[in-house]
Length: 217
Image 1 (cartoon, helix red, strand yellow):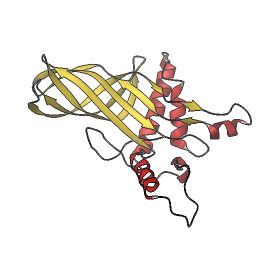
Image 2 (spheres, rainbow, N blue to C red):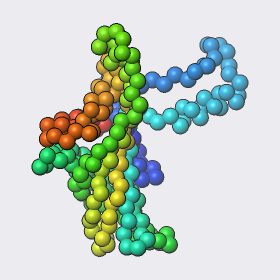
Image 3 (cartoon, helix red, strand yellow):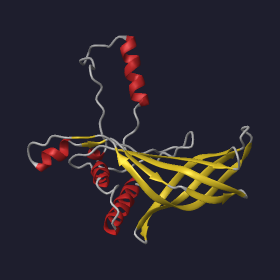
Image 4 (tube, rainbow, N blue to C red):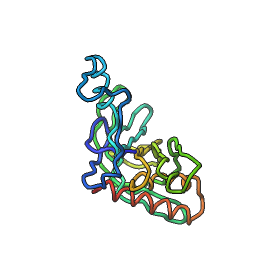
């Protein structure tokens, strides 16, 4: 599973330096040539492209979409640093980095603001696993491809303009299994995304904060 580090195209990638070796998924390319044999140039090129395009395990990406005025657009990314529960609802607190443009594409400016956004819901990616065998065997065979967390909407003042953030999303990718702390935490979030009780929201905020702590290592 994964979570982003370096910024490009409004995405924040957060590099993970010290995570147990088991916490990082290892990608195997099918059909790799036996040692000593060289794959045809075209095959090696495809393999190189697959490696380059495969998202790095343990990364977080965020995207912000918003509007202002009649045709102005707001694009950027949100860096969460804390999740908490207030009056039974979960919230994300962090820093918004936004770029604002008029309808004709003219740049209005860049804004950075600490904000708090309600956690509206989300979904996890495909989960797969065997139902036979011991619990440990099942856990080892299960993967949670992605956590897609939806935040907002939110109205705020940026650069003197009234901005409406209509979509803020966080995507996290990792792999579960024995020793894969990050992947197991993401799988644990799956059953809490639809929960409406204060207890489920507290558990959700707690797990999300643990995920952020791993990403900061």
